Image 1 (cartoon, rainbow, N blue to C red):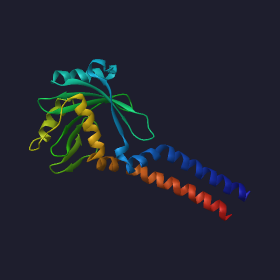
Image 2: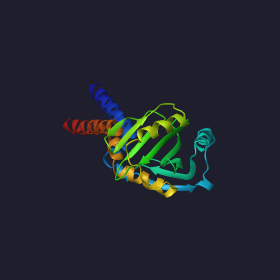
Image 3: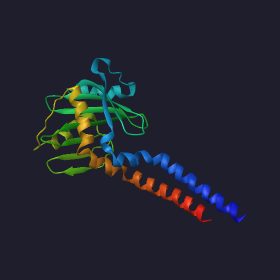
Length: 215
């Protein structure tokens, strides 16, 4: 009976480890290799197939002077690609990107590349704040309207030097640059729990293996 109890405990531990790995291993890989996220163009503006749930926000963006650019894909290692829909306000030098959240609700963030290197990002949903003076400002205004988000973004750009090509190609390149550069700090902050849970899961597997050999 004692042997059966030990076997049941070991199997339960392995089951927990498998679950933790399934949920977190991709986050650990993203933490270690953020530059491996692929950012690729998907469709130009005249072929952009915008989901109906995003259309009301897109209409508000157009009313603010944003022009549709196209859509792009972002694919982290070991995950399916996610599709985003891009707009730009060349006069104010701001990109706007729309995508569905995990619950299907619209998510909007504004992005401006800075010279010589850096970004200002303002999201309409919860996003960790990060400020590197003169180089990087990331923050959020939860559930803010596109107009309020736009005003806040422009305010946060004051005293900084926007740069970049505000075209579809420029937006794709800005995404790649973010993953290769300053965005890595934010990615690692977001995915550190996934790395820690992955280490814990591997420790459970190693413990079960070594414990079995010891018996």
